[in-house]
Length: 47
Image (cartoon, rainbow, N blue to C red; front, side):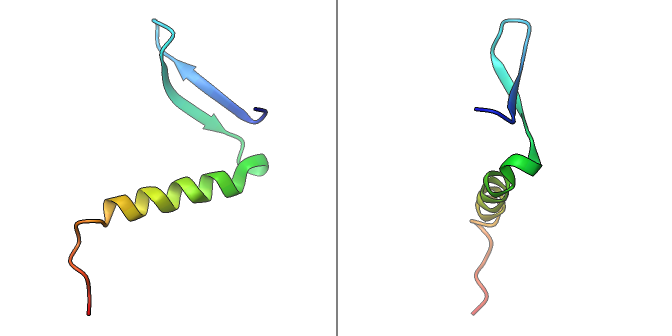
């Protein structure tokens, strides 16, 4: 997949990813939304 690069450790395991935001802005926004949603999962709901 173009515009995506993985950072690996000394054993070749993927530890991070770099995403070209010009090419994959929608993908990043979806990831960001999912992370925000997960971080707020245990917050008390406001009626």
